Image 1 (cartoon, rainbow, N blue to C red):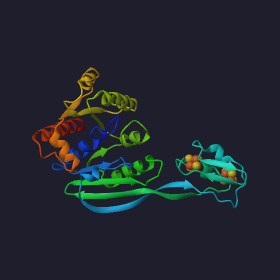
Image 2: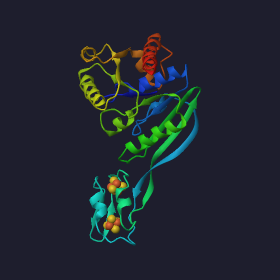
Image 3: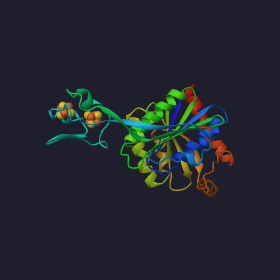
Image 4: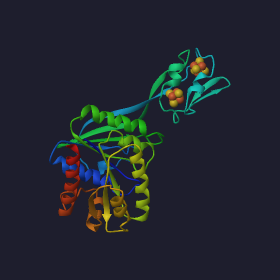
Length: 283
Ligand code: SF4
Ligand code: SF4
């Protein structure tokens, strides 16, 4: 089972839900928490464990070699991302635009654009009891998060296949968020019941429905704002599987980087409801 925790906007409680849910489930079965928000990973603030593996991550970028190049311009023509430019006496490659599709390199008649690895970030694997935690960090200044997200997912697929997986996804509806929920059995949308949160929730619901994802909503900070989110979910038959109340003591713990799933009775109840929903759809 791969469960993604996503949201239409930042600050709705994705990391809060993902870290507490993963820790709650890990007391019952082997669990993996993956921080897919590689541009700004912060699950690691809450999850401590032993570092059992670290590695650098790379993406492949073409590098021009002048020796046999005839300046035919084919590489520029085949690049859909405008990452190759033929100038008067050479070929320029713009790594930040390159999507590593290999087209220019494979189609060059003189093998003048071999693909070379360029480091884009790091991956760390931690373990604490029954919980495995994977965190990737994109290098500062690196433009594209998608290659690292996809490699992080592949690492979890390869090394931690038969465990329930909770993914803390990037916010919004852009490419990193869509890449993160790929292959998910369920996308749990963290929703804040305010007009702004409601607006962005509708955007992510639309995006998830378009790519055919099964969704459920968890309302975080219930009690602030209004009932629009719940009414909308009811009318559109989207299950609201838990409601976490707006409670000052929770916010205080969160601000100190502390988990709360086992410290408040209502958190045990709400995490239990989410876990039951996951077990139900796993049948
Ligand atoms: S396709 Fe190859 S030979 Fe042609 S301009 Fe590009 S690098 Fe040079
Ligand atoms: S690998 Fe693909 S995206 Fe990158 S420069 Fe070549 S054609 Fe463009």
